Length: 523
Image 1 (tube, one colour):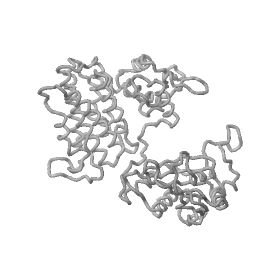
Image 2: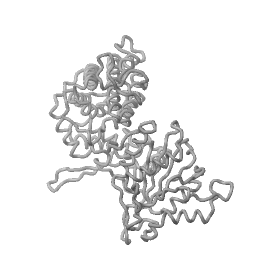
Image 3: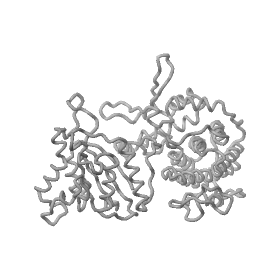
Image 4: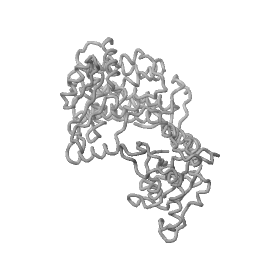
């Protein structure tokens, strides 16, 4: 079940929209199925014509007035006050939450949606059960969306009926997500992820639309970022990859500038760098024409200057193997990756530290791989894995164990290698590394699934698919390869994620935490 929350200022405008045709005539049969006064049917305007929206004008106006009554009494504005105006604040008092099922999950009854809406209102504190002074709200059900999703919208005016004062729900995003997970379990719906704060900052709708416009105009963005992605996302990718390739801050900043990235440094009173911001020179503010900068921490928490500096200091103390022949380096790293998969499978080392060490190694491998098409698959593997390496803050991160340190050392070792060709022994070694990574990524995916982190599990699985496509390409024409892609997939089939399965011990020597065999998701 998917939920989305936005806040605004015009309650009447929102209800008029929800009971109307929609922006693109996508609404059908709007029906009030839940309300603060426990009798939604009394608020539903009668139809006086054959169309879905031919409501009795007087009853429709009464609905708008009823919902907005507390805001009217409190004399709250229907637009956001400008800076300096009385009552200025960025936080609107009109709360709009949409809840939707995937098209494959079918429909819920109006009574079921009513229960869900009341539970959301109760647990967010907006309208607690039995509290006559709670905020006014209604829930509106439409026919299925253009994508076939059954859904409702909840519109609430965040003003208490008893005091006339504004109400500010605490952690309404997180609470609503928890409510959705509870109802998924109760109704047997597809499980979605709890909002655990592990996701990287997402691009806004405006940033995404701007990137799409630039793509149509022929500008794909930064060369090391995924073509057509928003500037914020591309900058995160470029900074992540460059940080993994760099041994210190000087190399990091120099490499960013050589790729055309604009860099702004912040210094403390002693003149030392304590922060930075980056920008795509072609991503400019529409009003000022100036490049739009993003601080490292705004791109992702681990990209702050403090954390990058700590990483470089820690990596300097690692015992990095000498760089020899390229195929020998790749084979050596493949051994480390296989050992990491064994450690995750047997829980001989914390999977947390291992998972956090995977993406930098994938990113560096993508940087040094030869062949644009195959290199692209490795880049997609690195960026697809992103969420799988971001663990919830509540999950304690233990000190890096032997395999996590070995993965970090391998990242530093591989960063010293020149361009990796796709010929001869190097291609064989590249295939070996790809197969090893396929196994490790599926082990991490299985660990996440057992821990009920579905977004993380899906990210690791997507990454494994990309590595497999790379392996399929690398394996063409390789005679005498020690293992084929199919072989490695068969070898980890028991660890492949299988949504809905309950982990249990198998008859083999597989540890208890692995999902049981059967019904597994294929790469």
